[in-house]
Image: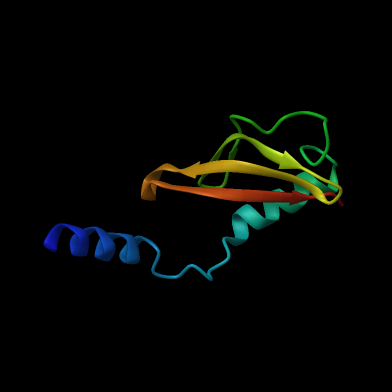
Length: 86
């Protein structure tokens, strides 16, 4: 099916290098974790922009930290950002 093929090719192109770590985002998340913000029931990160990602809402929280749903609008991608307690 040409339509499905086009969709798959578009998705593959958008995700050309899934192993690449966004260092800017990583550094900002580490800074937030070091201060304790966002990794506990404290201040929410919802609505904040971290690098190219806008934090939508907290997905969950556990002993290690919190996980947030975030969105990168320029490539129409949603991701999970995990903030580990420092």
